[in-house]
Image 1 (cartoon, rainbow, N blue to C red):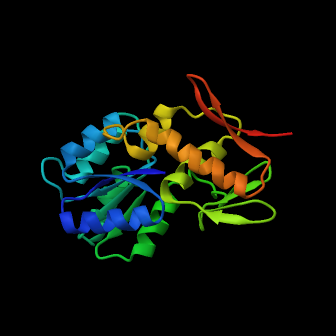
Image 2: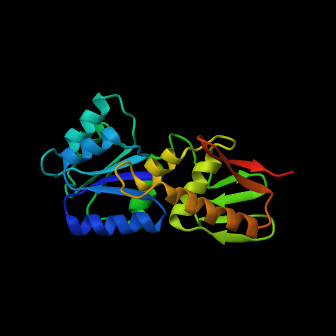
Length: 223
């Protein structure tokens, strides 16, 4: 899952990035509202976390422009303001959640999980063939054993298992996990696919990651 974080306090931003990455989120961090708008226009995100008091363009304005453009991207507002009127303004502007500083890391992560549920309870486990991917422990398991995946491995496997049978392109992996403006070479996708194939094989699973020329990767079941 990819999140845009817009927070102008550099120390807090770095701390939040670590919190999110430890929970296997991919994060793009920006430090003012104009940057946030630029990234949101060109990026592929599952949610945005916006500080209200930012330079250039404030978080409320970013949110309003996002909604005026027709986007239903889940948005969490961060602010030092705790007055009821401020919360009402944020929510009326289209925010999905409002978190007042200071807050606990567990509260932040719970809020992000809440706004990305799309109105329904998210299944904490994905299944395909004989494999199960646990979204809370990041464990990929078969009937006989399991292995905890790294951040990037988990996100790639999640993309493959969310829509079983669908083809995920190299570009989709790059945009969603590494970010559209990354300088990382696209062959990194092949490297992580190789890691995943080895781990799946170690589990004795009948699931395989199949490469489709000029298309991408998909999961199949070997009979």
